[in-house]
Structure formats: C-alpha cells, structure tokens
Length: 93
Image (cartoon, rainbow, N blue to C red; front, side, top):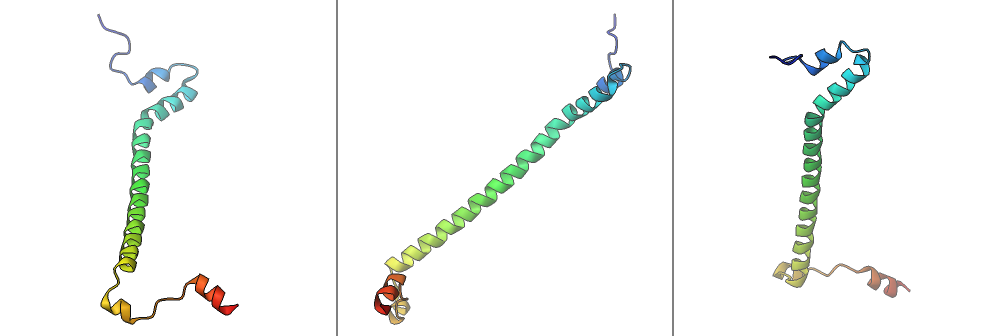
C-alpha cells in the first residue's frame, strides 16, 4: 500500500491545483526562509560585534586618558597644562 504523491515535491503536487501560482510562491518563500533567516542573523551578529569593539576601544581610550591624568610622567610635568574652558572664560572677562 503506497501513499499518493509519496516521493513527489510539494511544488509538483501544487502544480495540478488551480491556485498553484500563489501557493508556489508561498512554498518557495517558506523553503527559502531558513537560509534568509540565518544570513540576517549573521549580519546582525557582525554589526553587534563591531559596535562592541568600538565601545571597547573607546573605553580603553578613556581609561588610558584618565590614567595619564592621574599619573603624570616626568615629560608631562615639564609641559604646561592645557588651558581649560573654564579658565579661558574667567581670565578673558
């Protein structure tokens, strides 16, 4: 006893039906969905990884800057400190 249509493609079976055109497109989209979904997930992961790397680099830059402010080296002590915006406003008035 065999089942009708066993071993046949779903699209082939839909080809005999009067609504085969619209259903064929739906079936194709359903078959393509896992691949498209995986590709989109990979793109999202790449964007997220890039954003995380940029934030990490910014954090490292800020940490280095704050460390340099807290622990000036001998060459830093010889150079004049940069003028701050508050100092410029009060001295120019």
